[in-house]
Amino acid sequence: MEQSYVVEDMTCGHCTAAVEEEVGAVSGVVSVTAHLDTKRVTVQGENYADAEVRAAIEEAGYEAS
Image (tube, helix red, strand yellow):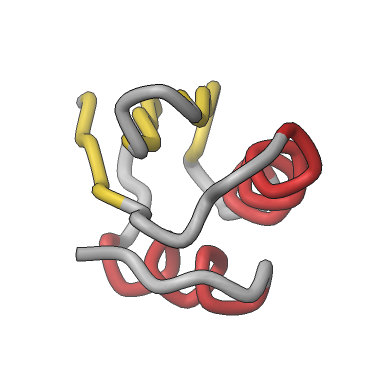
């Protein structure tokens, strides 16, 4: 399963690293890539909860749309 989230607040490499670290810790997430240029976070895995991914993005200090 693959899903993308728009995270408009990301403005630097630290932002993308923080989001990747938090989302990567979500159960079921196999890989996560935050793209600064497109403001997208792409998540791959199996049986992960959308709400948990969104909460992880918020924990990193950002908002997903």
